[in-house]
Length: 118
Image (tube, rainbow, N blue to C red):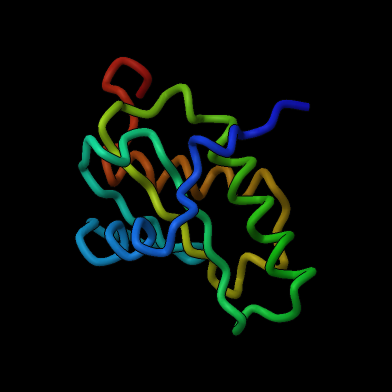
């Protein structure tokens, strides 16, 4: 199994806040995608699940689904962007392939994929 390297993840609170405040947001039923054009955080991604989603087990499952969807398509992303994916409640009841399709459709709307990959 392949993993997402820690150096490619947003970890600091200030980085999350920067992407959240200055990034462009798009949403669908399952999650909200924040896209921030930057060179200092280029290629980094963050995943968030608030306490409204439930206990830690549920929040961790949701973040695993988001991480896997991102990891499968991270090679198709254009350089120079930082992403933040924030889970929503309907994501608690779906499988990985549904989340992956939602990520692809929202990513195409946001224009985060390379032109030759679309």
